[in-house]
Length: 260
Image (tube, rainbow, N blue to C red; front, side):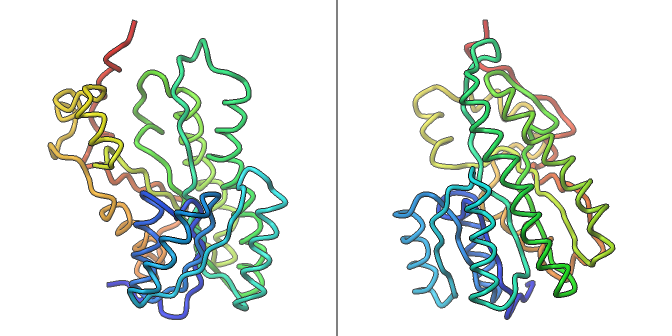
């Protein structure tokens, strides 16, 4: 267990899915968790559930594609709590289109959320980390940062860039006792995956053929890695991307079923 009592943690995109699992695990370890998300209804539901379970959680409604809102959110959390200790950059989206058909507005939106928000949230948080003598940033990357498939070229680009972001930021900020790392998840058994398998959109057999551990991961397994990197137990780890994918990044990837 990685006790985080008294730590103040921000999780972007923490209302649902992976971000929710991260927020819940951070809360169980004693951190006060601020969930920053545009989905107010889901955010309020997650915050209420966490508080009912004995954790300390707050919600902050935000459009993470707007740098001004990111700066305002970081400033408010620091003012309300006196410090910020952990930033989890997790918000993200994948818009599936063929590379030859990708709309410019979709590309810009994806990059603004998946990459630009990570940089500017990290920039804003690091200013406080420097003043207080340190802090931790953990970003959500993806197995698609190194293993690619069809209809997700901009997504793959954004996640490969996240790996570069943590390497560069970790190198620059390490001298201030600020650690920057990423977790790159593999295939996770989410509601979307379950539905895709049931509808025949996702070829489970093909996926399993490239997974050395022959199973989907659970969101909790990704959250475990994030909390480890955010804890003092990972004090010597900086500027790294940790692949939590059952070994997938050392294997291949099936093509999309509808490739033409």
